[in-house]
Length: 237
Image 1: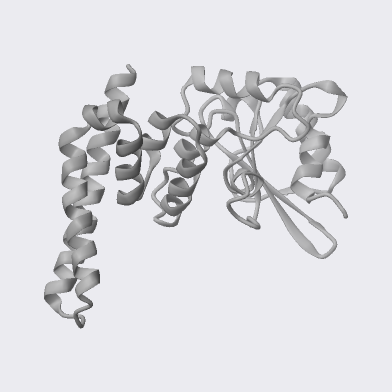
Image 2: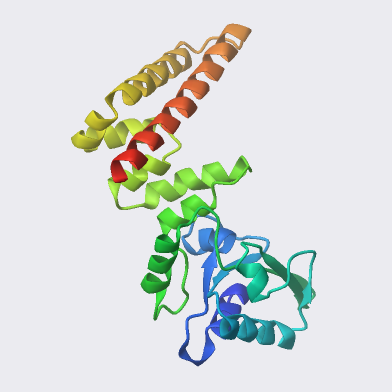
């Protein structure tokens, strides 16, 4: 079986025994087995001249050309810009996107990513960092974040990124200390989930009253989940 083109490119980017590129975003979701494909490849690159030059040389051998973006140049990367290139292989368009300073990732977190992926065959962003990167303005990314949370090992990280009322309640039941820290918020979630479940059991025909209940439950969960994020983040400081 031939290697995924994005994994193959990652090997080329990290040739000669130096870690220069870590797979991020959509392809990272694929590698964490939460999607079967992504339309492009995203990488975090080391922010130095040698790494950027090497990646450009690899892309040049593939005949890559820029899409509308910043150049893959240290001065632009240091400003937080992203570079986007593409090439064709086997009649398929291969799109490649690069950053050196991924959004919502602190310098300390980025340093931990590089350290943790050293020596890996296919380096990929870890689950909590990937969840932060996926917190975009696109609604579809939040379903992915919820699934990433379910694969996390650390309960506080699960609580921070969970998108499901049922998941939050289960976490609170399983980890008493977390539940107590977020007691008021979780009580509201329990009440909202109970109202939703009761409406579901009754099996009433759709009407505007039910629609309002559903919207209210969704709003409560969203607001309370945000409150939990604040509580957990504050506690972590």
